[in-house]
Image 1 (spheres, rainbow, N blue to C red):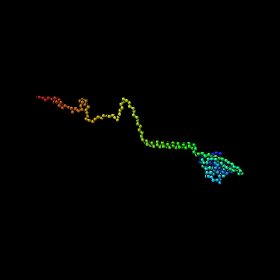
Image 2 (cartoon, one colour):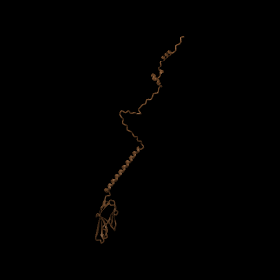
Image 3 (cartoon, helix red, strand yellow):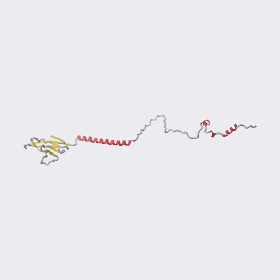
Length: 201
């Protein structure tokens, strides 16, 4: 009989040689170690039932792998019966466990990376939160030959304050003030010519 037990688990071995015609005597491990009353053995590791011969092994390791033989004696004491149980202790860390562990590690790395990325994006967002975004329009392409009016650079000539002008006199004489260019001598001569002659009588 063969049994496969994961390392660290407990094992329970039945003594098949113990029946109605036989009485359990002891267990023999790998033909070297005797597990029985009156024999010094590791009682913390091995425990057996006297009547049934059932053997319990606590927390098996790779060192517990091997063949366990249950020795029983017939009722008349003339014959012996032997049953064997072979134990195979499997490693606690199997290839399936390795795949599971790798998947767990990858998941943890992805979660941590996502958390760091989220924190960084949130931190950057707070820097720009509340700031107004001004859209800059691209300048339109200028069409050759068209005149562009720029209000900011167009100068408007205001009239300069000065002496008031008589537009009618400007039209007639082409000067601003007639009084400044009058020939007073000519005026006086005309006055004398036009004056009435005195009577000689």
